[in-house]
Every structure is written in C-alpha cells, then in structure tokens.
Image 1 (cartoon, rainbow, N blue to C red):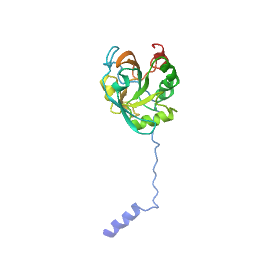
Image 2: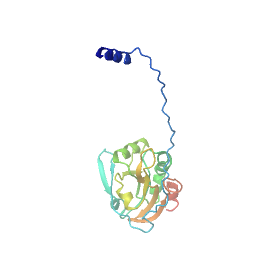
Image 3: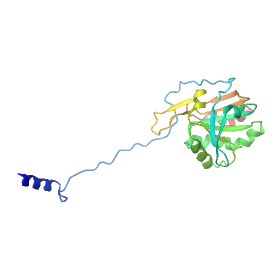
Image 4: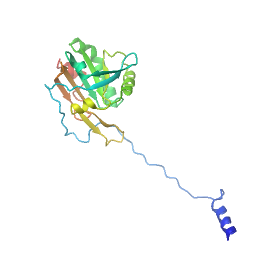
Length: 208
C-alpha cells in the first residue's frame, strides 16, 4: 500500500502532467484625481476680522537648512498673503494656483505685500522638492511652508477630508488665499473643497 501511495504522489506532481489553467487578467479601473471633498458643508472657523492663531511652520532655506517660523512672525507688523493648497505636486496646485503667485509675486510686493507664502499639509522635504520642481529659487518670491501635522490648518478650521479618495491624501487643507495685516485677516477667499475659482494671485491683486 505504501508503494502504491508513493507511486500515486509521483504521478500527481510529475512535471510532465498537463494542467489546463486559464489565467485571468486583473481588472483595472482608471482613476481621475479630484480634490472634491466628501462633504462641502464644513465651514471654516476663521473669518475676516479675526486674529490669526499662532502655529509653527517649517521650510528648507537656500542653504538647505531646516527652519521653523511662527505664523505670528510671518504676519505681525506686516502685510502678508498666505495661500493654501490641498497638496504638493497635485495638478491644479502645480499648474495653476502656485504659478499664479510665482508670476505675480513682484507685482504683489510692489503693492506693499511683505510676504507671500504657500501653506500645505505636506512635510518640509516634499515642499522643498516641489519648490525646486516649479523653478523657485528665491524664498523672497514665494515661501513654501510645511504645515506637516496640520496644526495651523486645524486651528483655522480649514481641514479638507480626502480620506475616501483612493489616491491616499488623507486630511489636507482647503484651498484659500488670505490677506493678513498685522496678524489680522482682512480678506479671506476660501474655496469649496479643492476648487480653484477666486483664490489666485490676480484675485488678491484686486483687493490691494
């Protein structure tokens, strides 16, 4: 009996045995990136006339040294424009929103703006590489600031929950542009979700 069983095993696993297997191709779904929020009913806690809450943001300087800066240091006694994007390297942010401020930075400065800064819930390393990819070599033009843990974004109530998107963005920031004078919000152009309709550099020039 043992010999028969052994003989059977050899036949069963013989390399010459023909197996009629049909391979199925995995089905794929084409995904289009969208920063539309799961819900657009969330209202920001920040409004015109409010004093900006303080928070610490980070960036790499021209010497490739990691620096931190507080929101109060960016805005106290100054006229500043802070604008936020849902994510570095994402299409609308890279092709339209940020380039509008890069192109108009000098004009904004000529109208009395001291600082133009882009804020994103990305780490400082990502922001450094994004800045480089956009050809920005001068922090005086546009400062790329990391709100890596979303501290500032949460304090002003501008979280954008994209965790239901398959691209893996999680919780980011709503798109906005604000004019801040001595730490006080004078203009707040806050978009619904990640839409880009009135938060570009041209829109800010109109209010200066």
